[in-house]
Length: 337
Image 1 (cartoon, rainbow, N blue to C red):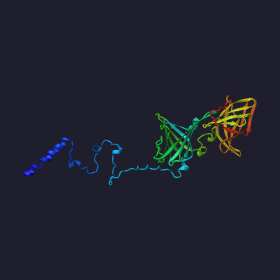
Image 2: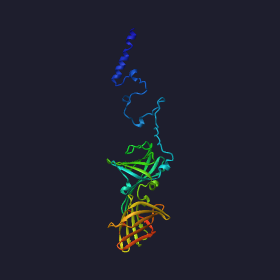
Image 3: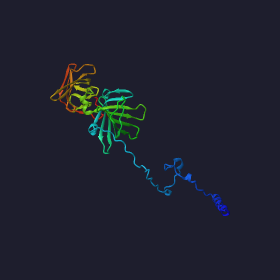
Image 4: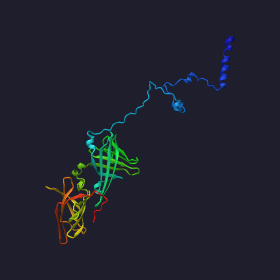
């Protein structure tokens, strides 16, 4: 008993000596035990980061392996033969801005969307062309971006939803976005958003191959623009302009008289062995009407000739030939006399 009583004295003195030297005592077994989940709360396990050279490689937990791969995004639900359906040229039949809907042709504008296959899988080259038709000049602006195919429908300004896929393209500075998708009736819907409030514009497109057949404008699409006579020294019509809203104007020089004739398409077309005749109602600057005027169109919609009868004083202009006309593709070129 005497030996047992003095056996704990050296242990107490050793513990006091170690405590005075700054050594830490081992924690109780209950405090050192980990929770049942095998991981401690983040607040308890967070420690200051150490240099890479001092860190030891971590060992993976066989029961809870670390996930290093991201879950793949859901592929877009593209329609069958989507390249044949989507990758083509489209023209806007309706535009909606700030709640107002209008037909671009009524304002002598056109918006063309051209979609082409890109080299990278899942992307499409998107070109958006805006043309403003004047007399006789045309102003044109185009922008090309790369679009990415994504899953998800687009809800239009009228609440109607598109198919369950969309094509999204950003501008170079990332401040403008185009979102494109196909409606159930085959039309193409595009939402254009910019950095400013109220800059969102909606466009509804149809295939350009169907444009002339559906009759969105009084004048065929391929005829929009200004044409000059191939022989500038010849008398007759020097140049003529056709606008999407159905109006037209031309510069005429004949027998010492020259002036501008303006008018609108009557909507009357006649098929002849030489092509299609499109009839107009024309008047001069004094309001005197032409007796007859028609433009003869080739199969591609370009003009191949015209017929004009106009009385100015005692002179009767009778133009019934097949002059050569070429389209003016230079907006900066002024054709007015």
